[in-house]
Image 1 (cartoon, rainbow, N blue to C red):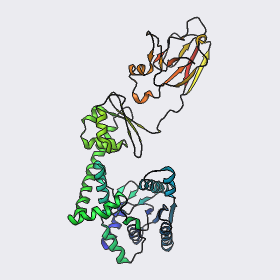
Image 2 (image 1 turned 120 degrees about the horizontal axis):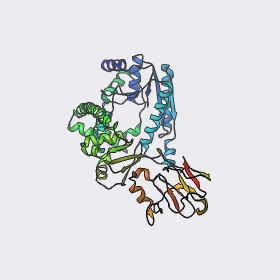
Image 3 (image 1 turned 90 degrees about the vertical axis):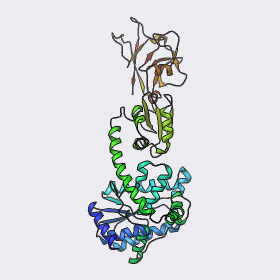
Length: 420
C-alpha cells in the first residue's frame, strides 16, 4: 500500500498539471487510482462514458460514480451514448467505436478545460497489448505498448500488477463495480486475459515481468527510430510522397516505421513491398484511422487519403469575346474560333477513352497517352480537366490544344481560361 502511494506521489510530481481528469469505469483499477490520487491531494475530476451496452448495469455504473464524486466533493463529467443503435445504423467494430467515442470525449474535455487525462492501465493490460500487437505484426511501435506519459495522457499504474491493485482495494475496503462482460471471452483481448495469459503464467510465472522489461526496451528503441525516420520523412518531396530508392534501402523495421508515420497499417507491409516492384499507376487501398490508397509512381509511392484535397468541382470557364491573338501563348489560356464551336463550351474532368486531335500531330490521341507523355503523376491524373464543345475535346488543360477550333489571325476569336 505504501509503495503504491509513494509511486503515485512521485509520478504526479514528475507530471504536474492544474487538474487531472481520471477516466473512470467504476471498476477496481480506476477506483484504486481515484483513491490514491485523492490520498495525494491531487486536483481530481472524474470522466465516465456510459455506452448503454449493459442496460441497467451501465446506468448503475454511472450512478455509482456520481455518488462517489458527491461524497468526495469532486466534479463528475459523464457522457451517455447508445452504442448499439449507432452500430446497427452505421456498422463497425464495437471495441473500436467505443474507443473512438471515449477518446473524442477525453480530447473535448482537455481542449475545453486544460489539464491532463489519467488512465488506469496496469502491467497486465500492458502485457495484453504486447501480445495483441505481436499477433498483428505491430512492429516496434506495437511492441512498445503503452507509454506512462504520452502528451496529455498519463498512465501511472503501468508498473503494477492487477493483483496488487486488488490487494490494495481489499486492504482499504474500497468499493467498485464489476463488469461481468469482462469474464466473457468474446473479444480477442478478453481471450488473452481469461485464457491465454493465465496459461502463459502457469508455464512461465515471471512472463509478465519479462514482457514488461521488453516493452521498456522497445520503447527506447522506438523513440530513436521515430526520430531517425521523422528526419528522413521531413525531406520527402513532394508532400505525401515516399521515394522508392529510399524505401528500398530501408530494413523491414524502418519500413514499418515509415508506414506508421504515414498512417498506413503495418500489416500490409508485404503488399507494399510488392507494389514497389509493380508498374506505375498500380494502387493499394488501405484502411485504418486515415484510410486511403498508396499509388505507385515513377520514382516512389504517393499516399492519398480519403476525402483529403478532393477536387469535387471542375471549376468554371471564363470566356472573353473579340480579343486579339497574343504574340506569345501560354498554357493557361486558349484562343478559339467561335464560328466552328458546336454548342456551348463546358469544363469537366477527363474520362477513360477520351481523345482529341492535338496541334502538331496527324490523327487523334488519347488523353491518357497525352498525360503519360507529359509524365503527369498517376495520383494527379484524375484531377485533369478538359474543355469541350458538344462534339469534341478542344483543350487538355496545360498539355494539349485541339487543332479543330483554333483561332486564325485576323478573324474574330475568343479567349478561354479557367477559374478554380
